Image (tube, rainbow, N blue to C red; front, side, top):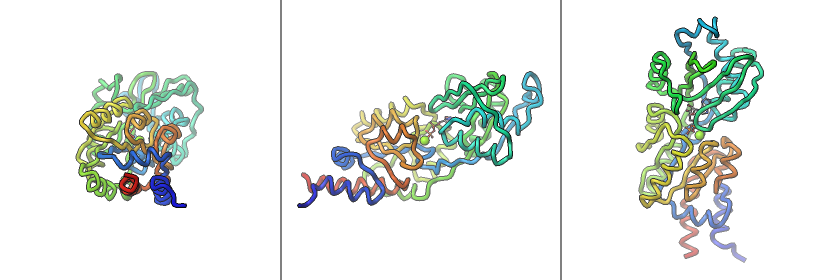
Length: 300
Ligand code: ADP
Ligand code: MG
């Protein structure tokens, strides 16, 4: 017996590195007209490295007296130790590489798209992006953040008991195949893909340029990613979103087809998505869409 076209397409897509969870998803994939990508961990490798540690003036005095870059990094790593976010893991790796002892932390809490906080010894340590309600009014912090962002870095602020004491600069690399995937998707759908990211605008624009994406929406919280997808859909697009993070999960559900990164992806993204890119090769996305379209033509 011959296999129904949608099931045959699922099998073929699987061999090309895309696990499509149902025939219905395979069918929907064939109707996609616009693709949106998350940045960190999706268009990028998701293995950022710590490029710079900046102590803010005044950090060496006061209650946190004698703060050094090493101590700052060790405290940030202690707070990030339980984090599954790529930035958190990069901070912990850097502390290990520097041979620093990482103290245990209590009361760990993470806010998707924002950052983490935990109690380390007697100190409340927060490591978070500069966006959100706690946006830094501290002038030195603001200057350091702007400077690092303009150089293309992701900048995160370290606060001790609520006071900004340092800024960490992290850099990630574009995935090989990202630009090719963008070109093929533009040809397939007749529309250039969109970048939706929680990261800062200068870093996002720089990475988007390397990938060949012109439409960039930055500093998005998880609910803003949902709104961005809904906005595209209201204007008639059938959107596939490719993402890896806990912060992408609500938008993966909202999209016509949510696609998660299989290796880099968080468990939540993998569970929530309709399809999974098993080898984290972005060119598998246009391949799967092309297969889905062919299967639809056979079915109809
Ligand atoms: P993206 O949408 O590009 O994948 P995220 O939404 O995961 O990015 O993160 C957005 C921003 O939130 C990061 O650029 C960073 O500023 C901040 N952030 C998220 N998680 C952490 C963390 N564990 N430590 C520090 N900052 C974080
Ligand atoms: Mg991400």
